Amino acid sequence: MLIFTLRRLNLFIFTMFLLTLLSFSLSFLFPGEQLINISGQVNATPKQLMVLAEQYQTDNNIAQQYIAYISHLFQGDLGISMASQLSISNEIMSFLPATIELTLVALFIAMIFGIPIGFIAAIKHRKATDNIILTVSMLGYSIPVFWLGLLAILVFSIQLGWLPSAGQLSLVFEIEHVTGIQFIDILLSDSPYKWQAFQDASAHIFLPACVIALAPATIFVRLARTAMMDVLDSQYIRAAKAKGLSFRQIIYHHAIRNAMVHVIRDVGLQFANLVTIAMVTEVIFSWPGIGRWLIESIFQRDHTSIQGGLLALSSFIFIVHIVIDFIYAALNPLARESRNGA
Amino acid sequence: MARDKIYLEEEFPSPLLQLWHNFKVTPVVMIGFSCFIFLTILALFAPFITPYTSVENHLDFLLLPPAWHEDGNVSFLLGTDNLGRDMLSRLMHGTSLTFGLSFVVVLISLGIGVVIGSVSALTSGIKSSFLNHFLDVILSIPSLLLAIVIVAILGPGLSNTLWAIIIVLIPQFVHITRNVVTQEFRKDYVLASRLDGASSFRILYHSVFPNILEKLISQATLAQSAAILDIAALGFLGLGAQIPMAEWGAMLKNGIDLFYIAPWTVYLPGLAILFAVVATNLVGEGMRHALKISKEA
Image (tube, rainbow over all chains, first blue to last red; front, side, top):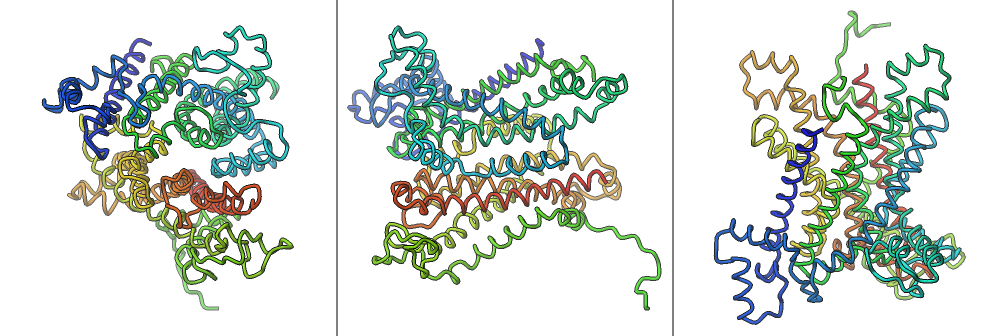
């Protein structure tokens, strides 16, 4: 386990190095002056610019500039937004939790629907059920998410009026911003309408989360189907059959557990895809998340925000990726060390 | 009865032909393939066969519903949008923008990716390990996010979007080329030609490429469905194709405000994207299935 952890740590450091390098070089690539791009001080006087140049060491060579940039990052200073002149780290802190909440709920929905359906498809391999599931899943990951979002709003919010179409929580409820994750904030607050607020937040998150979840769910269906078919093909299942276990026993006690492990390995890879979908969905559902903020920043040519947002979002994805790797390693001894079997 | 072949001859079709034989067995896949061909033809000839140009305004016929509606007009088969532009013509022009350009984009990034991938497969050591890590990092950043950042550098616009998507698609081609070339190089037939004194490049070009082409094509179809969705998504966000262009995503964006009074301006471009992506995915699926069959056989 130690070697595994060290290897992941190594990968993490390397990735963070590349990501910071990318975001650092963006300040040169964006149009405009590099010092202003990296700090966001659009209205700085020449004197302030001198101080900034000193801080970011623009007169020194590129390596020292990079080190200066990194030390700013470690102090939590990502500069200020060129559009609103607010601190970017504060902005990210207020927008990122909403995205985390939305993506995790969507991931959860995708997993609880996608994986069992994939298992069913594998068990009914080459029967009508399997074909129907495969056809529907093909449609599911072909639908453009922005179109699906619009249709969902039209049907469920406008025509049927069941669910709200925009935002995170109705404005009637006053919930203090503590963690930024709405559900936790509601539970922490001492509002007398806690329960109503909780219901309202659930109604708000349901539609966007389902829209985001559809495409990853269909991919989970396929992953789960392949994993289950591999497991059902294996020797130990044959051994279990030979011992006289019923089909139900084999599925519940042996097949599902082993197939789950393989599916979980790929969840991390799918997460990046899910976040992409979430960014577009946030725009449609006016969700106050980092994706919408990032896209707005592009329209405002807010280069400092784009750098910060990219860094925050990709670190978030990568951290989730590594966490899932650890869960996978914890579940599957084979992945930790090769001497555990194989 | 004359027999052309007297001797029993065993035929060895080329890998690509073999793929085609396995590919055409499944009827659903062939339907998808026909749709794909149809879209390709449409993308090539759209400007010649559309009834109107994509920007021609008919101010007497604003927001006309499709012809089967009782207010519809048969000269505008799929209705018109808020500026009186014929939806059918716009959708057909959009085929060459969204579908046709996605094809071009994939071809370019396939070319670049294969070159980088095969070079990296032939090198080893720190350079290749660095590249591997680097690719992993790039692949872990969501494609649309990366495209958005590149568009932010280059500025909004269709051509910049295309460059962005080309750059975004390259890593996966590098990755797959690298993997399959390394795999092939371990095989005996490569050793045989190496013993004949062939250089690495010659082996790569004459022996390995014909054998990995099918895998690359299969990856390319998957990449194309992603490219269609990305072009449309960027158009929808207003970062890609700009206002008068008939790109499907941009058309959808244009229709949002009219969604409630003229739903067809949103339904139709969305359906067009869905149709193109499903057709591409079907071809890709069929290709993967055929690959699996020829591997098992």
